[in-house]
Length: 532
Image (cartoon, rainbow, N blue to C red):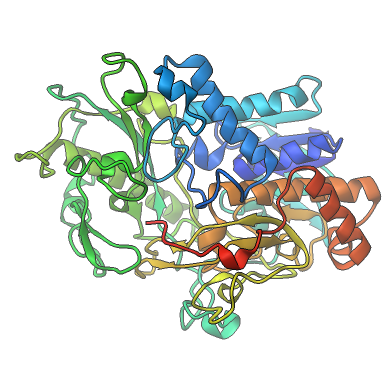
């Protein structure tokens, strides 16, 4: 069985969705596959509310990402019984979480993304195949000929063919399947010269993954889950670089590495990046609604306590990968059980049995998110690789602002934020300037018709730390989809577009008209500050 389209997108996360939108807007037929039964990746199947830049309400993203953000707010205004003052707030934060100006439920993000794609699905200009994973990539010379995908329910396989293929998978699966030149884990200083790179390269040094979950709290009720199989291990585990046991309110500050105490309810301050853990990633705030309408807030648990770093899930055997995925599941369930039964309470005593796992919020029977949250992917060997020296405040010394790229296709802003790694390295969390996304980082050194559309572009283990967040991933995907369509419409290869001044100018003009921001206004004045 075969299917053909103009642009094939493997992976339906944020980058994949954005790539599909740009390609169909430019007149191409698109087929997008997704391994789970929800599109949206980080925001939906992984259940992570958006981590965004400091100026996201004013600038720093594409027009379609801004359309998505406003779509979330409009969804709550149209469908939820908001208080008048909340409904009228132009910057409504549905969850009133401290991590973002737009914390919200995964299902709402899913509904908004589906609505954005709906006009193009009506006539099948866009097809979306859910529960579909890639299993083979056929390459001839420097071109990908086909991707074989498998229905995860029936096992049925199909060969998908297209002039351009975009890898929007969470781990860069096509890069491995197609033997496309790529990097895994941490580069060494001899290769990149980055101040915070490891002395020696280590492919198995990868950021922790997290299996997120949603929960609410009903005081006086008991929703204690069965004791997880690995609970005794996690109850006693302490990493050498961590100030206390994994299941504890004593955490490691990501910047200073000093011990900090942050419990569940003890500091209900609603100020960005302060307060207790309940308010940190809260995705539903009952204070937005009439008194008594809802019994509880809902919060999303993506905390230091459920960062899993005991082993990587990329560049290892399938057996080892599954073992670490199960380890991540068990850690999250153990964290919940500990909070329900043994955690020190803010008001004295131990345990919060009223914590209730909300699998209905994440769309699962087991209660956790549909998929593990992956912070670091395989990354292409690209025509141009973004280094710490291009964006890091310390690495740039007296230079003001990030490197200005002539081939910019977008912008982003976030600290270089690396979570503890599978090789036992603690946080690497350092200031970075607001940056651009260079087109060269989207072009593989050899393969001509495969483009990265997620976290798998030409960045390093270090710079992945600021290029991996929601609006940046969206911009990467949207640029990749537009590039594929531009090349098809005009008969050029991606490398020709980047390396021919006239074509690059034409492409940048096109995406500018589509609502891309290509530079920061006076970047030297956008002083970087902590996200914490």
